[in-house]
Image 1 (spheres, rainbow, N blue to C red):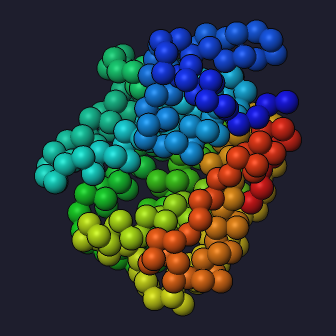
Image 2 (cartoon, rainbow, N blue to C red; image 1 turned 30 degrees about the horizontal axis):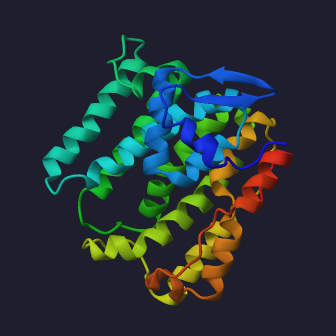
Length: 281
């Protein structure tokens, strides 16, 4: 039975060789994958836990994708200078363009394994996620609900669909996968609202309790389980607990402004997903 990684397994990622017990065989992952794992562990602990609960073959795909997401999502926040933030994002856009055009990809612990995982089509799609991250650099509000929805789909939907597709999801599953990603993206965004407001942003179109509850209901309505191959289901595990999270917001939307919503991902839910191959909304 595969379970949530214990402290010993997590310790392995801090060593030079990430050795994972798999069917009694110890499997060595490349130095670049180890580097990606460390980035994800430090920058996105919840996603790190979901990857460590997945089969080794999925980890080789998910760690580079999630490390890319860590690098891109934090780029707008590591500096107060918009121009520097734009340059950081442009570096990643240029790297994706190299992948999209089949050129030699710049050497980097994330770009090297990422180029082995995604094809040109997915590189172009992930470029859209970087473009949407430009919103994080500035303090302007979203123009309208459509602008907000596009941001969530680009930053959460592109990543989850890329992960699922790389793990074998069929094209007809894309709308449902993006629906799950939208719900999880909204949940993550709502959790970040207090920090966004503290940094001078205007994160929500309607930040009143009724508006927050309406957004949560709209997101919850898109939580429809996709029909996916077993391996591809691991791409959806970052959404574990999203349904309960959104239910809590619907019942008590004031929790968002207070930053008082409990964590979505629990060890029990993740262990159940690792055992069954599915996940609990």
